[in-house]
Amino acid sequence: MTRAYAVARAADAVDAAAANGPDCLTVVCNGMIGRELYAHADTPSRFYMIGSMGLASSIGLGLAIVQPARTVVVFDGDGNVLMNMGTLGSVAAAAPANFYHIVFDNAAHGSTGDQRTISDRVPLDAVARAAGYRSVVRVRDEHALAGALQSWFSTRGPAMLVVDVERGNQPGIGRVDPSPTELTARFRARATLKTHSA
Amino acid sequence: MASPSRRFLDLLEQHGYNYFTGVPCSLFEGVTRILDAEPRYGYLSAVREDSALGIAAGAYLGGRQPVVFMQNSGLGVSMNALVSLHQIYDIPALLVISWRGEGGKSGNDAPEHLIMGDVMTPLLQLLRIPFAVFEPPTLAPDIDRLTCTMHETRRPVALVVGKGRLQS
Image (cartoon, rainbow over the protein chains, first blue to last red):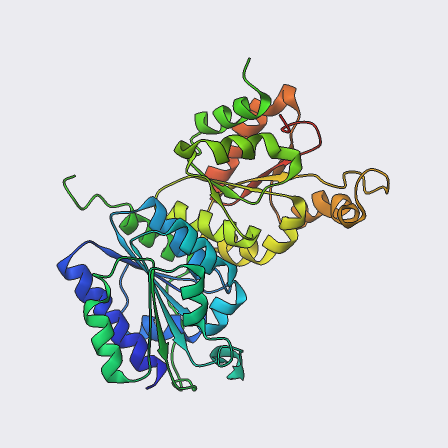
């Protein structure tokens, strides 16, 4: 399946979970994954990290710890996870039950021209399991992705879902439009909104 | 009387800081000892300084005001997070950075710290990070001023901690 397809289905699952439960806050890594998410469906509950490669999971971790009543979802890529793999250990050690990590894995640096990474030889699901994520699943096709997403947010985190995707980018895809400072302002307002009477 | 590290943490809390993460250094071991021992601080011991900055950014987005502790070697590790995350997204943080290799002369410290010790303050200037050096008589007004600057600019500021200030 293409990465853009998988990103769109994952975003739909996040939005469905948010409609039926606690608010979902999504942190998305730099590169094509963020652009694909933005092009599919943007909302103020998404934080697009355009620089600082490798840090989406760290941002999600800090957020999940200080907002335990929200569901925090990190959209990540294999290149990003590999760049700061120690954070998988930080996530497992802190063990926030509201932390959901979805990794779109094409074993390539998509944004720079699909140069290969090492995730074809270093399986990131095995690394996350060894680090101590409570739940880790890898899916390889559309059907398995749909099945995994259906119940994923009722799993206790930290949970990782690795999705095998094809290489290649959508031609002509746009960039994330709001400026970084606008993204911070709208996301922080959403993340700190008092939505529940408690 | 409370230890210098205890008084320092109290001062930070009085200034509204309420999230603590970082990587330890012997020059502020007194602070880390308290943070590690007292769960109420929620101190998260990070694996790398740039990851600590990412965690701090997440905590800020979630409504907290973070402090990130690091050795100055970690400032090198942190450079991309500072310039391509915090500074472009308007994410404030107080960085507490130890000054290993102060003066840059061999004999003052281990060889791996000498170059960073020598270039650290010009590096902070180059990165446009306002900073103060920890001096007990001016600490409270310096934290005041740095915190005001941090809120006005919504960018990171730094307190540089030399030897003997926060080891107890």
